[in-house]
Image (cartoon, rainbow, N blue to C red; front, side, top):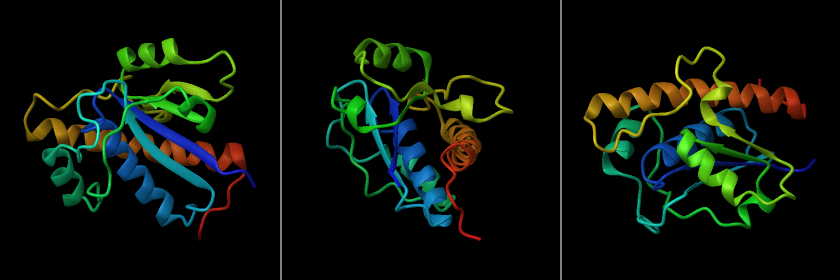
Length: 164
């Protein structure tokens, strides 16, 4: 079976996309799907390349049991469209930036991440960078629900077997 590859994208790859990366990675590990699903994250901007996730994102995630300390920021590259089946943006601006980079040959899914939460009241994951602690908690809530929806989508669409 071909491995399914998922890339989460935000602007700087230090808050939202590494949080999605870490949470979704946790969900995939819980269901013993690591051999079937590969996960990465990247930013459309280059300001934070090589840096660890924002300490506030990492602390909020760790408080819920999600480790982000192994992640480092990188910028989206054209080759990502050859490598990934799902390229999921945190907001419309990043989606537009990704669509501008998207090669004609890309046959995967390029969309907003929150579309995988059927009950989402928002379409975009708000950037918590300039806000307080409450913003990071809100981002975690949104990403947890969308991650569960994405996992269900992948299991159904690609006929994956979940660990019982």
